[in-house]
Length: 121
Image (cartoon, rainbow, N blue to C red; front, side):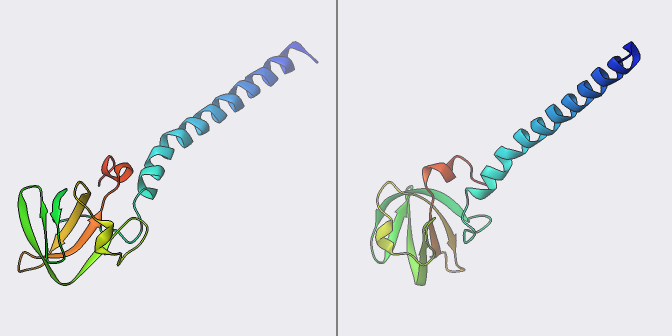
């Protein structure tokens, strides 16, 4: 091998290495965004009318923060694992998001677990 071909081989190897490092860096930077998108179940809404912590819950109503809301007829209760879950999945201290109807009643209640809470959209 001549000195010229050795220099070209080293230069080509450096370029390939820099390309690999840039590709790896781009993949690492994209990973947190993908992980965040995947932390929300597909059946969850893009946004809520409000969020808070349950202070009291019964079959007819719920107190979230310091506000009492009645449940709409046919209210849905949703968890990260399932839509149309049971009201009994919700308890005092649960972090929730909710959607209200025109009568200011809760039409749907959504459980927000800790991993989702830190990444709310």
